[in-house]
Image (cartoon, rainbow, N blue to C red; front, side):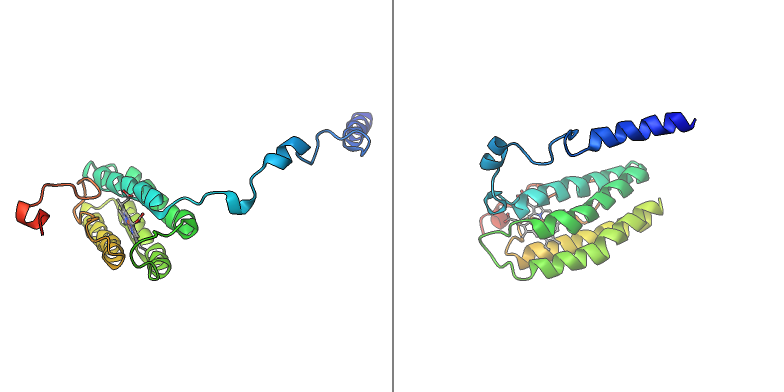
Length: 174
Ligand code: HEC
C-alpha cells in the first residue's frame, strides 16, 4: 500500500516539475496578440437582455396558467439572475432618459423577482396572478420612465410579452 502511494506521489511530482509542465500556463503568443482588449469587447445592449427577460416572463405566466408551477418558478428565478448580472452589465439605450434605470433595476431585483418566484413556489394560481400583476406593473413603470411606454407588459398571465394585440386605429394614429 505504501509503495503504491509513493509511486503515485512520485508520478505527480514528476508531472508537475518545472522542467516538465503538464500544460502551458500562458496562451501561445499568436493567441495573445490577437486577443481583444477588454475595452474592445462589445457590451450586450439592454434591449437584448430585455428580450430574454420578456421571453422568460411570458413563459412563467403561461406555465402557471398550465399548472406547471415548477417551470413558472424556474423562469422567475432566471429573471432574477438576469437582473442580478446581465442587466447591470448591459449597455444603456442611447436615446431616452436612462438615469433611473440602475436604481429601478436594483429595486426590481430586490422586490419583484423574489416576489414572483415565491408566488410560483406557492403553486396557488391566485397568489401567482397577483404577483404577476405587480411584476408587470414594475416592468411598465420602468418602460414609461424610459420613454418606452409603448413596450407594454401584460398584467395577466398567459398573454404574449410584450402586448401585440391590435389597438384602435385612433389610438394607433395619435
Ligand atoms: C429598470 C428598468 C426596466 C425594467 C424593470 C424592465 N425593463 Fe424592459 N426595458 C427597459 C428599457 C430601458 C428598454 C428599452 C431598451 C432599448 O432601448 O434598447 C426595455 C425594453 C424591453 C423590451 C423590448 C426589447 C426589444 O428590444 O425588443 C421588452 C420586451 C421588455 N423590456 C420587457 C420587460 C419585462 C417583461 C420586464 C419585467 C419582467 C421589464 N422589461 C422590466 C427597462 C426596463
